[in-house]
Structures are given as C-alpha cells and as structure tokens.
Length: 449
Image (tube, rainbow, N blue to C red; front, side, top):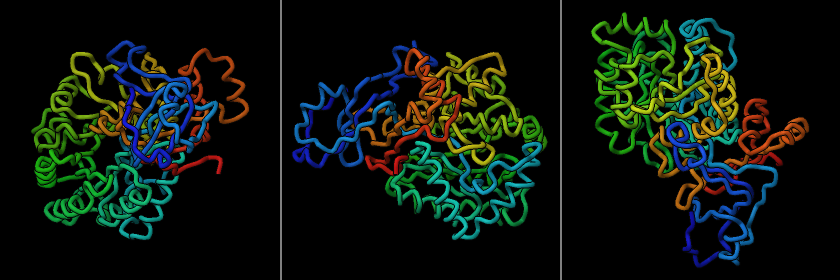
C-alpha cells in the first residue's frame, strides 16, 4: 500500500528498513498465498506514532529525499508487534510452579500470589518485570488480567503509560470460592470499583478497559448479572469482557453443579449478558458445537493458550473447530502466564504446533504467525489500529532475528523460504528471537544495547 502525502518536515521522520511481512486476510479461510504481503527490502516510514508509508525501498526512498533517520535490519524480518490475547501479569511471580490439576494449582499457587497485589509497591514491581519481559519478546499489545485490588490495575496501567503501549486490563471480579484475602466483599461493591477504574483508565492514551469475571465458578449469579450490565452499557465505547471458558473437564463439571439451569458453560455467560463482539474467551479447549455456534453468533473472540494447556494438562484446543468455515471465530494467540511457561508469543507458536499434532493436525508458520499478529488484532477488534504494516496503522513493530545464534544461522541455510525459517525459529524457541521492539514508532527494546 502506498501513501503519497509527505509531511512538510521530512527531517522529522524516521524509518526502518529490511524484509517485512504483514497479513491482509485470514489464511485459515482463504488461499495462503493471497493472505500476506512479503517485501524483500522494505522501507517503513513512521511519523507521530503511526506508519506513514511502506513499500519497496528502491521505489519508496526517492519520495523522501530528506529522510536520513533510517535503521537497517539485515538478516531479519520486520512484522507487526505481537499480540497476546490472554495473560495474567499478576501470576508472573509464580510462573513455572509445579502443580497437579488446574483447580489444585489455583488453590496452591495462584490465589496466595494474587493476594499480595493488595500492595501497590508489590504490584508496581511485578508490572515492571512483566513489561520488560514481554517487550523484549516483541509483544506490544496484550489482553491482561489484573486481580481483585484496584492497586493491581493502577500499577499495570501506569507502567503501560510509561511505554505508551496499547494494553487492555481490568479489575478481576471474584466474590466466591476463593480465599477471603482475595474475595470481593460484595457483588455490588466489586462492580462499582470496576466501573470507577473503567472511568479512570479506559481511553486514557492508548489504555483500554475490560470487565473481568475470573470464571463462572468464582462469581455469584449477582456478580455475573452486574458485570453483564456494566459490559453491555459500555461495549459500544470499546470496553471488553474477558474471562475463561471450557479450559478443563473438572472445571466444566464444577460449572454444571453451580449453574444447573444452564445448558452449557457458554450458556452461563449468555444468560448474564457476557457475550458480545468484544468478549474474549480464553482456552476453549473442551467446547460443544452448540457453544461454538453461540460464540460465533455473538461475535466473541477466542484466545489459544497452548503452553498453558500442555503445562497444566488441560484440554487441547482444536483450531479447526474454531475456524469451521460456516461459523468461523476470530482466534488469537496467548501466553497465559503464569499457567503458560514463557512470555514469548513466538514460542507459543511452537507449542501450538504440538497441541495440534497431538490431535492429528498440523499448524504451519503461515497460519500460526497470522494468529500472533492480525488474527490477534481481529480477536481484540483492533485490526483497524494494530496487527498490520499499512499506512495509518499505529507503529507497533517487532523485528525478528533470523539468525539469533550460531546453530540457528547454520540451520537456516537448509530452508527454502521465509516461512520455513519462521517455523524453525518458533520450534527451536530461542529467547533471542527479537532484535528490536517499537511502540508507537519509538524503539523500546534493542537487544544490542
């Protein structure tokens, strides 16, 4: 795509140069070779936090004779900033904790850890660590759980403002089946606090708010009802609903016991007004056809959390069911830290391949990288702002190193195209895959420094 409008002061522009890849359509639903734009030697021109222009360097550079601030990335691939559709920054202190079942793991590690986030200092320290970790892995947008306390929400958004990242977060609503140290005092007070935080943070700079019932078993019917009202009143303003759904068999059986009047787990959320076009459901591993159709009909998005599912031994996500052609859903990739075992969306792609192979399917690099970029943006209803390298889009960008170490550089000589190289990278899972990360046109991570 081309943009012929040149600001009067070309000296104020900045640009990056190198091979670029950006998706234009969903490769799960269309011929793969029609779904992306690959430019071998691209120039990406940025101004005031957005992409001003992108194209072949030899064709584009003459249009900007005053442009001298160009950073070149050789043996690299420039992509849109990676998108993490489900994560718990408050679980960073307990990542890689040995567990048993999902529910036992929550009781033993998660709830005691999240109880510490009543302290603003503790929350701020965790937020600093989380942002440093994800930015170093090329993630520029994430859909994130805080926890019960306002301090956990404020700490997250304050750190996000410092980097100017586009993030989604919110207070977690949970008023039963948790330790007293983490439990909301009442349904009414919890939703009032969520609403006050929403008014404080939603739309402030690049920050976005989500109404977050943890999952159906930890909210009373009254809390779910009030959460649905809050979401319904503000979804038109870009507010999200974020929760867990159909992660594990034991969880599903518990939901059936608590909500016997509902046909399915998804039906619980429907009954309380929690399904909509900005509802994002994490996991969705053990889903009935009736539920897939309901999620599709309401326009919900789904977050695939592969390393978490493997680590906790939960269900196995079936992307071919989620993407069924007669009722496809928007699907994005997610780290789900701390059930997930790393902060890298690219490493999740390697785990997603394994989850699919366990069920006799495969997931190639074209489709998986789509999930990590434009697919994630579509899931979060942000594809008009992030997830693609096009003029007018926010300049959130990741630079992948195609030879992050000596062995990988040697291995790459046996690859035939860029997608084979990407598959090697995500399978080997080097922690050095990202060379640089840009947020709104500013480089916030540089591996060489």
